[in-house]
Every structure is written in C-alpha cells, then in structure tokens.
Length: 272
Image (cartoon, rainbow, N blue to C red; front, side, top):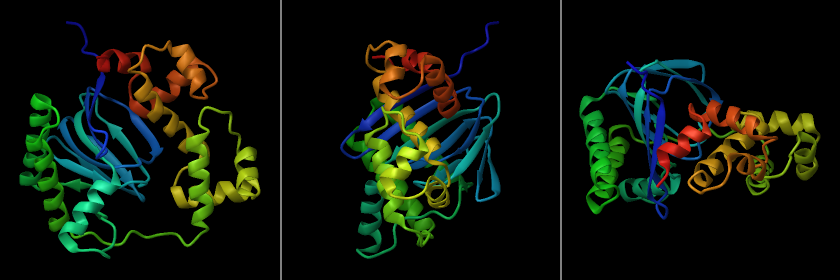
C-alpha cells in the first residue's frame, strides 16, 4: 500500500480580520525555536505534538487543543501520524474581543498555558473546523470563532505579558526593516548599521527581546511571504530569488524546516 503523503492546506477566511485556517496531515517534523505574529488556536486531530516554551514541555494528545501567543518562542516535535487544525488570528481581533469583555485599559490578552485539556473547549474548536471545511468563512463560522475565543478569555482571564525593559524601539524598527527589505541580502552588519549599534549589541538585544536571531526572524518572514506567492504561477527558482533566498535549494530547505513540507507540495495542495 502506498504511503500517504504529508500535506498542509490553508484557507484565508478573512483578509480584513486576519483569520486563517491551517490543516496539516501527517506532518512529522521537529520545528526549531520560532515565533508567530498571530495567536494560534490549534487542535491535534491525530498523533501528538510536544510544545516547548520557556524550558517547559507540554505534550498535546489527540483531541486536545493548544494556544500560542504572538511572539511566543517555542519549539515543536510531532509524531509520525500527526494531523492538526489551527486558527491563526491577528492580535487585533483577539484584543477587540478582550475589550468587549473586560473594557478599555485591560492588559492585552495573554493565555498562561499552552495545552488546554478541557474537553468541551476542544469539542467547540473541533466544531468550528468542521464548519469551516464545509462552508469556509460564514457569519455562523465567525460567530463561533468569537464565542470560542471569548470563552477562552473568560476561562483563563488574560494577564499582562512580561515585557523586557530593553530598547524596544530599536528591535521594533529592526523587525520593520527586515519585513520591508526581506528580498534583499541582509547581513547582520547591514542591520547593525541601520540600528546604529554594533552587530554584537544588536544580535544580543534582538535575541533577548524576540527569542530568536534576526536571521531566523527574516527567514520566517520570507516563508510567510512565500506561502502567499506560491498560489501564483511563478517558477520556484524565480520565487526563491525574489524572496531573497540564495537559490531554489536554499528556499526549499528553509520552507520545509518552517512548514514541514516542501514548497512544491504546499503549492500543489493549495492551488486553486
């Protein structure tokens, strides 16, 4: 019997609200230290996913859910039969729901756990994914997402996220610079010159604040851009160079490391 292939399918539910659904099948991979720009509300459909944050590892089993914050540094190790569904939601959407529940001036939403073993909450999330697979984004799906996040916020009231008292404006400016110039070759010396710091100082400051190096942040952003452009009919070699990778091989290695599948496989699964 032929071995089933790994695949990742994404559905952009709302560009305006910043909501995306991601469905992964048979993704066996070890994802090194990385961060996301969005909240991730995930459900392990099959297998296990071990998530390590701040030195603590939690094992998320079948039909258990998990939550990851924006910019939360973590690593993941997945079993061979690992299948998952994830809602990726921009912080603004979650913050707006928190304001509705708790009022203006409340600290930004922060969930102090990773694995959620509440069976009712997991079933609620599963129902959302079932609805999305059948209908895509609808008023019913949006209302269900809002209810789910509101329930999470009320189950575990948000607490202030610890913020390092380093020069945050320099790191924020460096992140913006990396995003705007991701197609260029950006050695640490160029970033340091932009930030008016020594390369060593910038590397230390950036890594302490973000949890990953400037180069890892850059590669993750390039992969995020690649996910959008892979829907277009652009040759992989041309796409690799336009995103700032050295060549197609470098692009493929980096994409697989971040996503768990190759760019070609991702394109095939998500082509319209």
